[in-house]
Image (cartoon, rainbow, N blue to C red; front, side, top):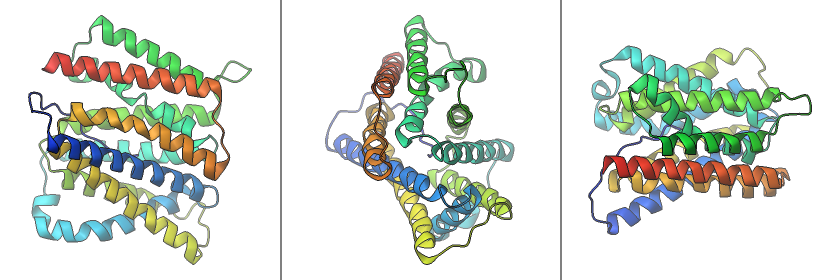
Amino acid sequence: MAERSLASDAGMAFGAAQWQGIAFMLAGTALFTCNDALGKWMVASLSVGQILFVRSVSALVILAPLVWRAGPREVFVVAQPGRHLLRALLIVAEVSCFYLAVRHLPLADVMAVYQATPLIVTVLAIPLLGERVGWRRALAVGIGFIGVMLVLQPAAGGVFSTAALIALAGSLCYALMMIATRRLRAFSALTLIVYHTLAVGLAGLLALPWGWQPLDLQSALLLALMGVVATGAHMCVNQALRLAPAATVVPYTYTSMIWAILLGWVFFADRPTLAMLAGAGIIVASGLFVLHRERQIKS
C-alpha cells in the first residue's frame, strides 16, 4: 500500500484534465494492487525484511534522478522533522502488517479491510484534527464497519484470527499515516515518496538478519520489479491529483477490489465468498458516501 493525499479542489470544470486524472488514478490503483499481489507471492518464501529492503533499493534507483534534478537539499532538508519521523514509523508498521496479513489471508480480504481506511480516517479526524462529523457520515462509518466484520468473519470461538487482527492493525496504521500526511501537505510529493521509501528500506535492512533466505535470480528480479511498480503507481496517483480534484479521482481507488479479487482468483486460487463480497460492497458503498458528504461540505 501507499500514501494517497486527500485534498479538495472544488469548482473546476469537468473536462479533459479530469478525464486524464481519472485515467491516471485507475492506472495507479491497478499498479498498486499488482504490487500487492507480487508481495503476497514473494512473502510465501521470503522474509518481510528482504522484501522491504530489496524493493526499496529498486525504487530509490528510479527516484535518484528525480532527486538530483529537484536538488537534494530541496528534497531532504525539511521542517517538522518529528512529524516526518512519525509518518515514517507509521508507514513501516503499515507495510509490515500488510505483508504479514497477506501471507495468511486472501489478497481480496486484506484489500477489503484496507478499503475501510477512509472510514477510520473520518473517525480519527475528530480527536486528532478537530473535525466535526455529522450524523450521516457517522451512520455510514458504522455501516462500513459492519462490512469489515462480514469480510473477516470472527472464528467459531468469537475472536478474530491473528492474521485478521494484523490486517486491522495495518488499516489503522494506514489511516493514521494519511492523517499525518494531511499535516505535511505543504511538502512536495517527491519528498514524501523519498522519505517513505527510505524508511521502508531502512526497516527492511534492520530486519535482514532475521529470516534471511538465499535469493535466486528470479526472486531478485521480482523484488526489484516490485520497487519499479510501486514507484510507477506513486507517480500515476500524484499525476492524477495534479490534473483533477481529489474528490473526483479518489473514489476510483475502490477499483482495487476488482483487481484484488481477479488476481487472487487467478494466481492464488482464492475464490471470494458471498460474505466477503457483501462485506466489501458495504465498505465501498459507505466509503463512497463519506467521500460524497465531504465533497458536499467543502463545496
